Image (cartoon, rainbow, N blue to C red; front, side, top):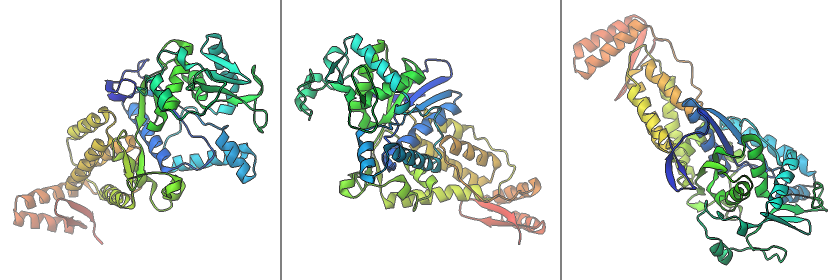
Length: 444
């Protein structure tokens, strides 16, 4: 399997640090509001990656954090007139409702920032001792000029960043790009005692401390949206590798953006959609299929037209799985080979979905249980759960007659085809032909 590594800007053959074991950290949400469709795409992508790795025989230790203390949380709680942790609990419950609807499997661990303050403080203390961080009036900053590799993920030069960045002026910082590891805070309802006074963690240090706690100093895959490459993931690398001296993650994997009607999604443009809102009008499997029909690194355009087309495609799968099947031998190896080849090519679900629909066509043409089982196998890897009516069990002798009749029809042996149809009808079954396939069902 090859994955595109943002760090090297190349597709690399995936090789886990431990045989058949994968450590994967995916940045979670700040729980102050409902998740939007951009979140949905990200978590569908990494759930699918996890499913495929599992399909390939790996055990995946999947860690996804929750930022449950942040300026946005405190501001929103104040606006709503409720305690911050009450807001957090409500949004966490909403998060899992959304993810469960999209058939996104749960992570192995969901660490919360508020439960790992001691680990964060220890991390910051160690960076100060090594000379990579400094304290000013209760705030602690990372010293970017001390870390030689700063900018290697985003491919940005520190001098260029300083010249072009819109950085808030702060005379207490040694360098404009230095970022906060700990923020002094004596006024908020939630703050912790530390060696530098009362305060709370900076955003970037949270993921470094929690990934290290659950996956160690170095792990296989770090994932998230492209919007996190800079500054979040860049800063994670700097502070973690400054402390440990070894690579934080070996593969940095980032999913592309979601646009709405070809425009960037934003509340100011009025094109901001939460998962909760979308699922009122779109079946969850259709939304998941919509994301999977584009390769994860490519931008994706969300529109009513696109969703309708995906809905039509989805119902083709449902129809194929709802039809009666027959115990007919079929060689499905080429379909499985093509599916794996697509997924091995940087998780190209777009090509994999094309193989899915080739399997649908083969199932419709033959009615073979082998193709039905194969289709269900592919859908499981892609996380697409499709409920279908229980199909009728067709006896083997009737299935054989139906297959023979179909071949006779293709050969334009109309007399034989009619004779076989009469035999099938006499047994209490009827044939339904379409342009490219046939079905057998119980007679009424």
